[in-house]
Structure formats: structure tokens, C-alpha cells
Amino acid sequence: MINDHDIELLLNDIVELYGYDFTFYSKASLKRRLNRLFEIDKFPSFAEFHYRIKSDKDYLQRFIEEITVNVTEMFRDPGFYKILRTEILPAMGTNPYIKIWHAGCSTGEEVFSMAILLKELNLLHKSLIYATDINPTVLEKFTKGIFPLSNMKQYSENYIASGGVKDFSSYYTANYHTALFDPALIQKTVHSTHNLVSDGSFNEFNLILCRNVLIYFDSQLQDRVFNLFDESLAKLGYLCLGSKESLKFSVINLKYKQHAKEKIWRKIK
Amino acid sequence: MEKDQININCKALIIGGSAGSIDVILMLLPHLKAGFKFPIIMVLHRKNSTDSKLSELFSNKTKILVKDIEDKDPVKDGTIYIAPADYHLLIESTGVFSLDASEKVNFSRPSIDVTFESAADVYQDKLVCILLSGANADGVLGLKKVKSKKGMSVVQEPTNAKVPFMPEMAIKNKQVDIILNDNEIAAFINRL
Ligand SMILES: C[S@@+](CC[C@H](N)C(=O)[O-])C[C@H]1O[C@@H](n2cnc3c(N)ncnc32)[C@H](O)[C@@H]1O
Image 1 (cartoon, chains in turn blue, cyan):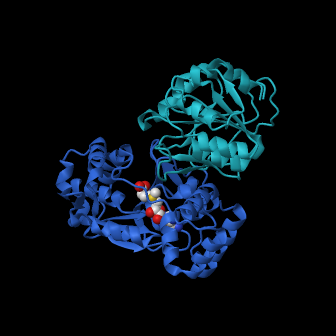
Image 2 (cartoon, protein in one colour):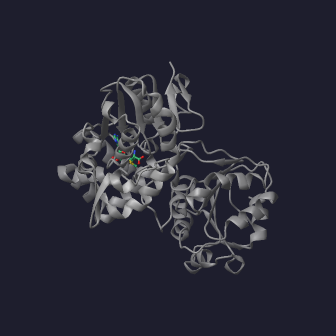
Image 3 (cartoon, helix red, strand yellow):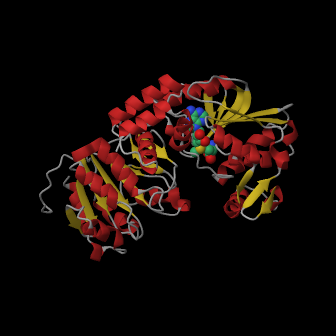
């Protein structure tokens, strides 16, 4: 087991050597992730784990991949996508274009879900989607658009529950164990690494989605990231969070109005 | 340890349960006395569709505040908390909840082990954990950690549980201080 003191030591070294700052991640869940990696990579002692991270840049990449949680799915929380489909996106139909930022998009299931919605609403041609994550490996997977075929049953159910009426399988080509999604869906999507801890605002958006990323940050870092989103949102733009995340404790809350009881907030000031 | 000697300065009570545990909780809720000086945190396995209904179901049985947990909510005394479906529940030393949607543990999310272990880190010897009916061994390793920090470990009497496997495993692994029937649990909590 790695103790709290070791963790502090390790995180400080990582900031100093590599510039990745995990010191404001939620301590309890970070501790679990660290101990999990320590175990699966079978380090005999903390000292060796520590040394490997300090001396091996490639291992740091693995460290980031394993410490962060990449679990995601298409049309995750179908009720949320239903509101996007029926209320939020149609209201943007009169905009000349729609700019969307998926912050912490992982392997991009969320981005494909959005692209499908936009296509069905006939808005895809005037949408510009930015997909970012701290981890370059997940972004690479996203751009391939290949997902396990075994997930399609659940994604298709989610899609239908979110109000989709097409045949979900028309969006991909099945091949043995994989589903290759129509590349046209993400043709105009821009992807890039972006670290929410250290990178700044880079554009102005009508819609920002950052779902199931902030739960891994402590309250202080959450507030910093909320400020970053606030700087990056156009007036009357929307911020969408995960199903158990909230703006309620944040300093920017006063400038935002929650959309009914949904995890969607509109910037009103 | 005898049932009526409780020598613990309880700062948090966590109840873990799986198949057959909801009925036990519905039975004990009406007998709980309000004003307890710790949070009661429930980590229950179920299908995620029943999420919000669980707190409604429980609220009907007690006047005590029953809350669904959101990320970074403060942990308050005298309140009953329910871990949301599909997230692991952790407790931070700063006194707030954290949620985590990482891989399932023991085929479960929320996993009882995860919450017991994280709470043991924070509350140490001031933690009481109760493991109820269930068909899964989730919670057993967690109780081990609780015991290693000198917290108190309680399970439902297996012959009294709808599905005895979970408390049975804990007893087999010698992780248990007290064994209670379903109708004794409320009185036990009221004496903490
Ligand atoms: C659980 S996934 C969320 C995926 C998707 N948004 C969803 O809700 O299904 C969390 C993602 O956040 C990313 N992440 C973690 N820390 C980050 C940071 N500092 N900056 C940007 N992304 C980060 C992880 O790499 C991971 O892909």
C-alpha cells in the first residue's frame, strides 16, 4: 500500500519533472488508482515505483492512462441526450454555426453521440466540434471511430431511450468484433490534447460538455475549471455536466440558470 | 464482544447490502431515533433504474432527512445518505463525498468494499460498518480494513438473512465483532 506521504512526494515530483499536476485531484479516488497501478505492475516497493516514474518517460504515459478513468459509453444517461435533442440543440438552429467543446471526451463515444444528434437535427454541417482530453491515447482511439461490437446492443438501447428513431446500426459497419463508425460524422471535428488543470481557454463555445471528469478533481480545482469554462462560453451558451456533478458549490453559479432539473446550465450573465 | 456493550465513539455508520437488504432497511428505518451524531451512509447494490426511487421509498419510512449523494456534497451528522447507482462512493478527509465511475469491483458499482475501505482511512477507529444480506462477497475485504483500523464490524445473522452468503463470508473470514438479527439493528444504531 502506498501511503499519503508517499503520494504527496510522488505527485510533487511529477509536477516538477513533467508538468502534469495531479495534486488537486480527489485524494480518495486518486489513492485507489495509484494503489491499483502499483499492484498490477507488481512493484516490489514504493521506492521502485517512484524511481520508475521519475526515470522513464514512457512509463509516465502509462501512469497517466491508468491513473485517469476512461470509462464511457454512447448516449450515456439517455435522458440527458433527449433534452439536448428536443430542447437545447433545436433552439440553436437559428445560429449561423454551433461551436461545441467536449472537455475530457475520453475515447469519443460522447462525441459520436453528439454528431449523430446533430446529423438527425440537420445541424451537423454548421457545427464545429472540439474534442479534447489530457490523454493522447484515448484521442487516437476516438479518431479511428472503432468500438467493440459487443457494446452496440447497449448503445442502441441508449440511443432509442434518448429519442432516436433510426436504425442505430446504420451509423456503423460491423466487422467480426468491431463496429466502425461513419467517418463523415467526425469529419469536421478537431481533436487535441488539453489539460484542464494547466491549459487555458482557446475559443468561445455555444455548448460545453464536461461530464464525469470533475468528479476526479477536488473542490478547489473544480472551481478553477468552472472559471475556465465560464471564460470559454458565449453568453446564453450552455454547460453540461455529469449526472452527479453540479455547479451548486461553485463561484460562477450566480451567472448561470439551471435547465429544469437537468445537469445543464445556461450562462445568463 | 457483547451486544449491549458498545464502546465506540462513532463518527460514521455505513450500511452495505445486496440482494435481500432493502427489506431489512425498510424494517429498521421507522425505529431510528433522529438526532444521531454521525452520518448514516448506505451502499446498496441494485439495478440503476431504481435510483431515485430508493430515497423516496426510504423517506416514507422515517422523518429523518434521506439524501441522494452528489459529488463533493458535505458529509453531515444526523442525515441518511444513499450512494448513487453506477458510481463508487468515497469519503475525503476534508469531510466531503467523492464519486468515481471507474471499473466495477466484485461485479458491483457501487462496491461496498470501496466505501468501507475509504471510510476506514478517514474515520479509523470511529467507524461502524454493517453488512447485510447478499449473494456476493463484496464488503468482506472492506470489513478487514475496518477491523485493521480498529473500527467496528457488524453483520446480519446469516440464518436471518434472505440471502446469507455475504454475512456468512464475513464471519468465515473472522472479520466480525457483532452479529444481529434484522429486528435488532435499529436498537443497536440508537445506542451508538
Ligand atoms: C470518465 S471519462 C469521461 C468521458 C465522457 N465525458 C463521459 O462522460 O462518458 C474522464 C476523462 O477525463 C480525462 N481527464 C482526466 N483528467 C483530465 C485533465 N486534467 N484534463 C483533461 N482531461 C482529463 C480522462 O483522460 C478521461 O478520458
